[in-house]
Length: 283
Image (cartoon, rainbow, N blue to C red; front, side):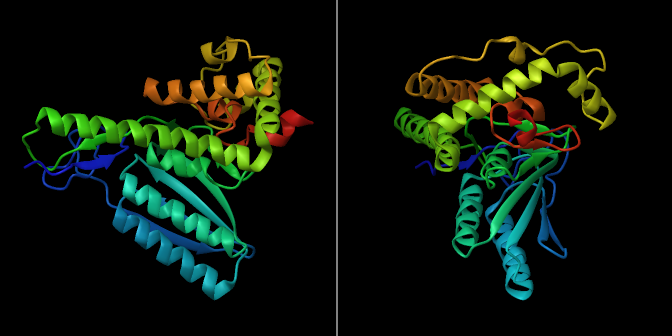
């Protein structure tokens, strides 16, 4: 009988033999490291490595210790992760909700990379408090599976797996969309995306220069990227929202890293550090 393999949202596409953990091809799986830095107004907690159930528990314990001891009302979560377990991601999502219920603001930051599960967690930070470094690699994509060893898979097994993966992909899109709608509503989301897109087109040369100076992975003479050339939809709220949801599905299906600027335009983050902030486009 086949046992259901671990569900992963990893960017690396390889597994360390015998562990099921994602890893860069040809290299051992990176270890999970969670560190904390108490600051005057908030705790800064860094998560390095794949998102795992054990890592999620460690993150919760480290952050909770800071909150209980210093009584902070803000928690900054910094991510450098290639992705990881759906279960681990959901545990961290639950912790973030629990912190909010006790009045803690949750700010999220992406450093070298925030891929798959880590990218979703980045976008689920508090609205207006999600940022990425200009050179960060961001990847939003569909859920996949990694097995620990060779297993026999029947047609029925494959069908059940396909159904589960489809449901998880749909849940992920609805989670990202619902997070935005809960903060700004359909009209606010439409206004944010359209204004950011229009602003970036109008100020591309200046933003490109800022990005280069800040160490962003961009050509100093690059013209408008293809995703920015496409006209922003001008439709009713209901029709626009359906188009936005369809666009999110396409973003996940493309399975390609995007620039922090594109994530900013999509309202998946709110700031590209040293380059652009959400409020700048709305001024």
